[in-house]
Image (tube, rainbow, N blue to C red; front, side):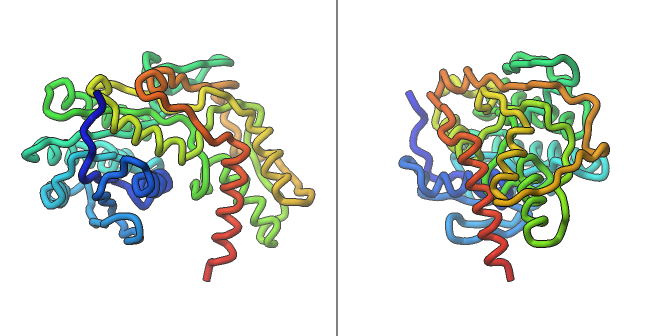
Length: 319
């Protein structure tokens, strides 16, 4: 039996790339909650949600925000993927999650909490071909990966103690409109735009021979909401969110170049090449598919085209 219909759902990190799409999905889903609250250190648009500015690294702020809303669901996306020190990762990804979980558990009716992690937690650095399910060891040693693993373990401890119904997910590569320019394929698209607009003369790339698993951000939003509405078998479990297919980065690059409509020079930048790149990594999302019936609906070519359109529209409307 699926979970009762939600009345109020909090989305943390709601102004971010994935968070903004989750908020949009909740606004249009057939079983949309009447109340959607964006919780973020930045303020967002009032069009699709109520907004509360909150620094989750501050325990008192977090407890006050949760007490004021009394949500019956929380999708936790807030955090950082890059930073100058371990302290930054710990504060944003571990301490913030600890404060959120403690505040949620203290509510009169503890909400279901979905905590979002990353495939970087797997830390795959050798071999040629990997299909990765949730049982794969968590070997990620980079600060970001370690902080996300600590976040996940802390969250699942609440589920084990029956203090909160908690679900954990690990996202593989996410793409789509609004993707940050530091990530492929947005990194290619932004460089193509720079060339077309006269800000650059070529596109610089790293190793394009690898194959990775990409899912459109709108499909990711649907997967997260599907898990939030899953029955109690989801509680205390970890789910990969992945397409289950590998795309050659060189094919993505070629597609980006075709969108330019004219020839563009490409140069491999040695600084962008990682010697630990595994040739092929694919996420196994069978557990998610079995429980909620989720399958991605938007292929990477369509996602890429939509991302390019979003980027060019943004450029045209910029002041």
